[in-house]
Length: 350
Image 1 (cartoon, one colour):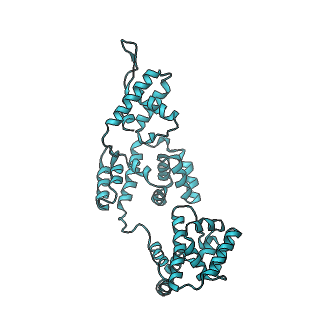
Image 2 (cartoon, rainbow, N blue to C red):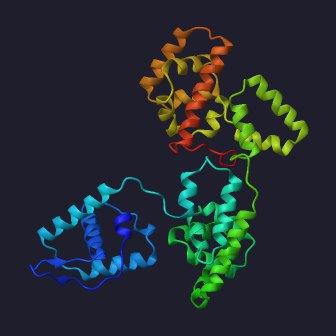
Image 3 (cartoon, helix red, strand yellow):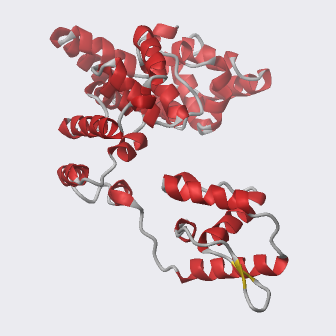
């Protein structure tokens, strides 16, 4: 991309004395992009500036046929330039901050963003456009429909659609209409709106924890012994019943399998659990246990018969072994959920 980014306006190609074609830098870049695209490569051309993207597109449109010798020379020059690159740096402040993520403090990163935003040449929309839709939507909740229309106009179509879908119905319809009227908004007004949104982002104090208190307490209790979990939830009920109810929804235990797992996901979960631990968990649960029955009912008859034979042969299970085996099943479910391979049913969806 660094080689392709060196696109500068030059004169049209001239015939050299020997009859060869002299190509400009942007024409060579257009040839490389055309060659890579013909091979099925998808280049991150959106990282180029709009002027560079425009010049590149115009050059691709202007070129017609390129001889094999010329193509070979352009490719060899491109490869030589790429081979000479010893180290590449991310472009822009956001790229540098992503590279140093976790190595510099949050306060230092915020200070750098404020300094960059104060620069007359800074474009606040580059940073806003890089935000996920979940971070943009809260900024728009308190803004007027006119401001929201400007914001959506500066986002990609896909991201604008995501943000619009998160707004309340009446406001979303108003914003969608106002987008059609943004053509006459002055560029300086658009820039001031972007700067104001950036200031709101920087005014939000940094969070010490990525996840919320409900998720953190739920994750802790997921790995706690059943007795400890029940005692803590009883105490939370006395202190804050609403918080305790939210924590219960965040907790997932072996007993929650029938209510929160889709039947079709059971085979996938069992493949992620070691057979001995699965047998131990099912033996400890007992044949009449709803979770054990649910698991055995949603696998093939042959596999269910094999597991029942192993359960009968397993004998008694120590409480500690039972806890560890059930925790292993729950851990496998959580891992698959985090990987996006399964989705847990929330209590409201039951």
